[in-house]
Length: 311
Image 1 (cartoon, one colour):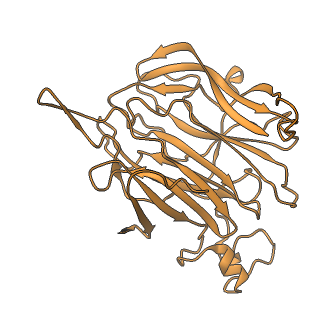
Image 2 (tube, helix red, strand yellow):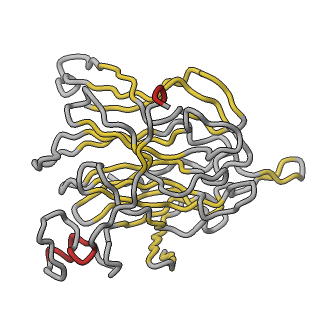
């Protein structure tokens, strides 16, 4: 059994949040034995930055995104089977007021969690003080494709409050060594909705609920997430899939149905060429079931820049 989490002890405080004491990976080899109380080894891991609890009215989630961390495992029989993957939102170790506030990063282990790769920053947008990446989601399909999704404000307001968010998607076919371009997969929505009235004065919502989950299968991934398209926080369903040739069909289907060739057997239609979005390697600091619960369910499809909401 593999778990991930953060040490919530306070390390420091800055102008947009509270810094916690680190990201952790936990492993148990006896949790599957009902006759014993499970024991866990605990290992601090480097995600390329600090755990931060956002605490700013200018950000998209005033009291949220506290060190969100995801763990996923490849359980296939492929050469990538057994790999362990971690994804988290984090703030640069060298952050100063006015810098890019928070990003999402990824690491992998090929030896059962004993050692880990250097962290990769998955969001490839230019650094900006208005660009928040938070609420990461991570899962692995049975054909070893890794799917990663997160909330993102890069296309929202350039002035505070940076409250307009949307989901972005990227995927990897080689165990997280290279990734597709960052793909926006929902319309923008206001993460400060709904507002509340106290003594006749209007205030923004304290946080947007992290009712998020993703489950991958061979052709794509199913997502449940919180959106505010109707002026209130609701749980929505979203289906994403790799579509490098932009034909509205999963690349896996294109290859299976022989609409596309895959002569090098890399799961990518040959006509697509290089799909990578240049995920950024982060230097080490010392070197420089889908959740369909509660609320109202809608189906959101976002394709070629057009959103459709279907009851």
